[in-house]
Length: 318
Image (cartoon, rainbow, N blue to C red; front, side, top):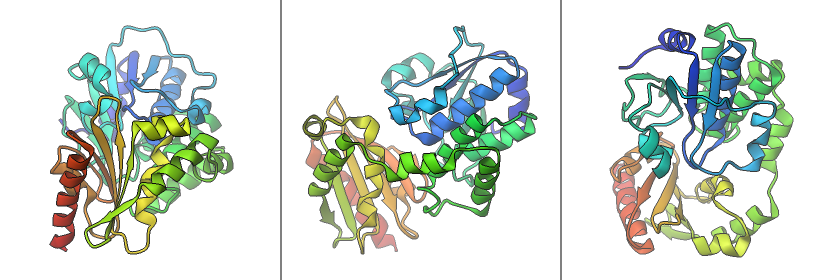
């Protein structure tokens, strides 16, 4: 059942032992939204824990400073920024898929898996929604909470460069800055700073770039061997997803990364009216018009062929 902001606030007020789940391969939006909400719920006297099925990059450490996950038997489980239980990761999906009580999400591709869902596809990030939720609940937003939410807003909009950025996005970002969000350092860390291992991985990734669909599609494939050569890992790969789309003349940029089980996770970024969600949706994934993802199986070339076929069909449509 789809619910609204007020009903979501009531559900959280009415429960006292709350588990917040983040999606696998966690980004700034799922983590920033969950940690800000967790701190707000603690402020209300709730027992709260935040859990993620994957390794969390050290760049997000500030979100957890001073916060301790409560030891709890959850009475209420909330999925944050998760459009499908598959995105919990294999282990967490097995544990929690049938136990989630509430989903808070902004993906139009949400498969409506939870009994209660607050869904706002028009929101550029789940962090925008959490900001409104905290205001609705009368929470005093601390500088740390503001920093968590600003990270979610900034990372899900590519530092306000993506087409999902709205007037409301800027308004909320401004309010978070006024509340003490560490905007300078957040932008430095997530958009202006590269670890040496990431720089090595980026070099290998760019060298792997290939073009398809009359050079309107740029394709990067990151392999497990690249992780070994660079010393990097999956926690650093998010920023690479935007590189192929930056090439002049490219309408669709794809970053495909090999997972340890041999499958491939693809991140698709598009320009203009090319619908990334439609491309990935036909392959069992989803997301937004300008940014979406899916998981592919088979050999590397089979995965590439499957994606290129759908990308060509989408380009031909326009």
